[in-house]
Image (tube, rainbow, N blue to C red; front, top):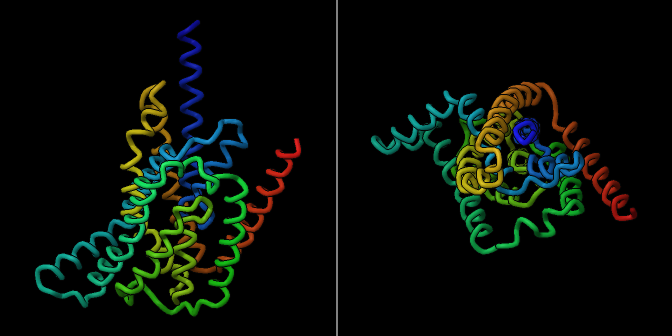
Length: 286
C-alpha cells in the first residue's frame, strides 16, 4: 500500500513538473512573462507557488533550446570575438554583436547578485504578489504598445553596437520584477531603440543565454532540494519539457514577427493583468 502511494505521488509530481516545464517553455520567449505564469497557473490549479528556485531551474530547459536553435549564430559570435582578440578586428559585425551581448549582460548580473545577496525577502515580497504581477503586466502591455507604435524598425543584428547592447541590457534588469517578462522588456527596449521586430527578438534570445543560465545554475541546488522527496526525476522531466516547448515557441515567434506586429501580445497582457485583478478581488471577497 505504501509502495502504491509513493508511486502515485511520484507520478503526480512528474506530471506536475511536465506541466510546469511546458508553461516555462511556452512563456519564456513570448513577451508575456514566464515568471508570472509559473506563479499564477500553479496557484490556480491548486499546486501552490513553485518558488523562485524551481522557476529558475526550469529556465535551463529554455537555454538548452535557444543554444540549439541559434547554434550557428553563437558560433559566429564566438568566431567574431576570436578574431577581435587575435587580430583586433572588433569592427566586424559578429565581433560587435559579441561585444553588445557582453555589455548587455553586465547589468542583469550585477542586478541579480544584488537581489540574491541583499534582498533576503525577495521571494515573499509584495512584488511576487498577484496584485503586483497584474499591475506590472498591464504596465508592460502599455510600454510594448508604445514601442510597437513609435519604434522606427531600422536596425538589424549586423548593425548592432555595444551601445545597443547596453540599452537593451539595462531594460533586461527590470525582468527581476515578476510580471515584467525578460523577453517582453528586451523586445520593448529593442523596438523603442529602432530594431526590426524579428531582429529584436533574435537579439533578445541571444542576450538571454548568459542571464538565464546563471540564474538557473545559482538556484540548481535549492531546486533539487525542493523536489528531493522523489529524487531528481520530476525536475529533470520539467527541464526536458521546457526544452521541447521552448524550441517550438522560438520557432513560432520568429516566424510570427516576420509577418505580424506585436499587438496580439499587448492585448494578451492587458487581458491577463485585468483577469488577475478580478480574480484576486474575488478571492479577497470570499
